[in-house]
Image 1 (cartoon, one colour):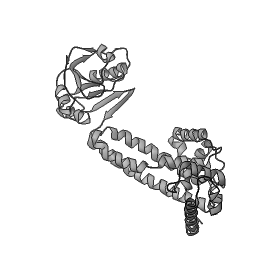
Image 2: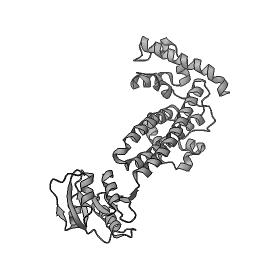
Image 3: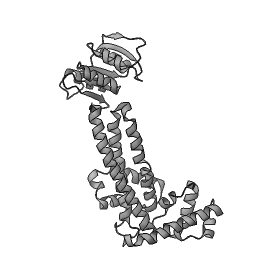
Image 4: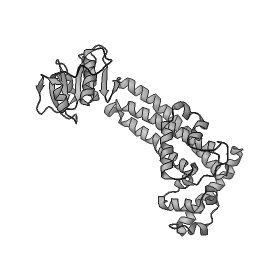
Length: 335
């Protein structure tokens, strides 16, 4: 579809395409002719757009059903558009509930009308330039998130955790996800050309939501699934200005003063242990109650937790020892 619209723009003739069929589309249509076996292709759609009238595709966009159609939507539907083609497109989108694309003959721009939205589809070259810039910003922001998470691990192991360190991770995780959604929305207009971008985007967003949820499970009180869900929703609903204010974020999540000492439960640290089933991890957290107690746990104490055998207990103890040894190296940095 993206390539088809580019062909129409290059022809300089303009066009009007309803991306879907049904009774409501038929009611607002007059004239034109039906096509049989007209499987959609960019070239075919571009050729049909040279004729007067609009084009109707089926709901899967696999077949071109009609061409040369005169659309007559309800004239009482409000629209801010001035050109006849775009006024018709917006009203058809509202009346039928289908996506409608209008290609401007003069401006050489394709505009999508759908669900009350008006989206101008910029040229793939222009979109790709914006996407590349945003990906670079997202990469830098993801690096800052990773740095904040490393620092959080350091202070947790050293017993110096505060709510401020947790809030910093939550802020950056939320910002990464928001910018990721912006890039994803823009990439949609690239069509098939956006596949590589989606791969890059997937890598940059990997584990971000899990990190956000794990930090909340470590620090928020009381620890209930409903409270965690509400906290996730509250973060997503915050304005950009409020999200930049650590105190505002902490207040929204019900944290005390950000510089107060905090005792994480250890969910995030334990999540870094490979092949540890979630039920066993949850039982370990419930048994020890805090990351500090967990880090001090002896092998025999770990064995008292259901699902932890000798092999797993030894692996956990070795992992905790590595964390504590690393903390000794971090202390000068923390000071």
